[in-house]
Length: 371
Image (cartoon, rainbow, N blue to C red):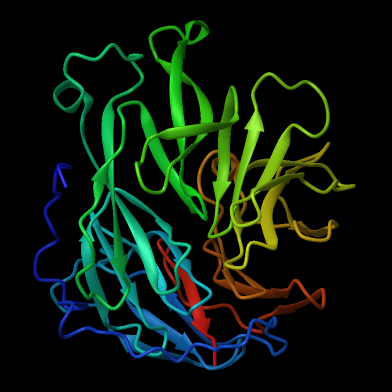
């Protein structure tokens, strides 16, 4: 792989080598939705790792805050964390892709360098994305100014076992998701002239051939990707001025569907897709506020408005939504007060924890045990 390799964070107590940290999976093998409430809820409390046997159970500390850590330091923070249908929780720890077993959340397996990642179509695997500056990696090519990096991808086994070498993508394409036909990416076609000094890219959603890794098909022109998941890519047409401007693309069946309508408002900004690709949690832009949370059924249609959520802010419109899926359960944690809730998308039942958790503002929900 020709991409640059970020430095690993040194001497973190919870990171283990691939050999020592191989996962023992306890995930459920059934494809049926989980009917029971979530158990073994794993959270980063904001500097320590906690586990709840059930939503109202006392917190069990799986990893304490290190004695040498500063009061506001959180060494356990993961970026882009998500739980896969096979059970592993995957995320980025300071430039390093890691995976962990929710049954042993205090230990994480180092997979490799990554600036971002996305799930593989194969179970127990994930794609790590690295980058090099476009000025050197794309020297001699004429590209829009908004193209600042050339990307490479490598598929990792989540146990840490060595996998095949990765490959570098053509300049101007940023990888986003895996599909049965190859990697889906965002091709920068031009700079938007209306943005002044800050160059905003005009992009197309494209498909790369699984063997040659070259562009084979354009899925959407002048579109921006809103959210990605293991089997869905959601994009918005930038030149659309009517309903149906947001499309959910099924990466397994290779087909498009429009997002279901929500009575309370329209989906605004990014969202979180469940591991099976059926459910999409997103903020709603209503006539009065943007802090409504909704769950959309991408397979059968329908929208469930969960009402106002104090933890939703304007940043959720452009950045990752502060919620996590574990099978068909959506877990939300209000980092302003420690309130924890679970919503079963299949039954429509919402459960609130009776007492708020003691957390800091960096707290995160990671997932649950699937057994």
